[in-house]
Length: 255
Ligand code: SF4
Image 1 (tube, rainbow, N blue to C red):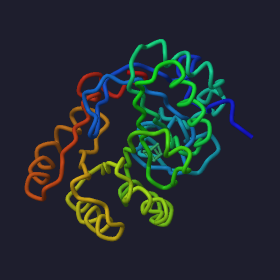
Image 2: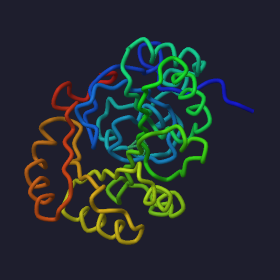
Image 3: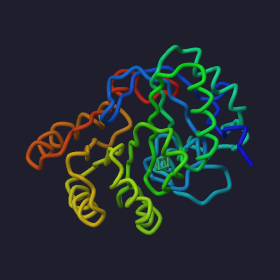
């Protein structure tokens, strides 16, 4: 049966849908409408959208556990289920043709996104849809017909996820072959690059479609890694991605 709702992150009593500038990856700088899905199938230690999955009562560790004021999230306060027609109306109200499906892991809701994209294209024909995914779930053939761009961010050891959960051959084989794919790796140390190169070789990821991005949830942390990573990208022939939205707005939600 067709899905009629999307499970989205809740922010200030409403779904987290906002108009901003894409801050990462190959579309960096484009005005875009972001729709943030709730739920994720991975549990990255440094995740900055942990309010989409780190529910009270779950065992997953997070870097923020070291902060005594950090608490896991109450699902009922951080997840909202919204009718697809309402999501489409909200997105259409921004008059912006570029739409980014993000999360959490948005591919957990494949068929609901198809309906949303169909509903939006009935309102205007020039929408461009991108999805930001952790690359563990291959989309359905139907979803693939609607989407224009995959921004895939496979996770490394530094995420704390087990390799068998974060590197799924079937999904990575799909993305490696798709001409719509761009791969973005979050890099915290030079050791991470060794891992990227092993993953690139094992899964046949096209090098010219790989971007390396410094890990950091605030500008000071990013600044520490930016220069060495930019030089490493130059020397190893990878594309560099910054985190523009962190520079502009810090780690605030909904911007
Ligand atoms: S895959 Fe993305 S949303 Fe999921 S835990 Fe990792 S960083 Fe967070």
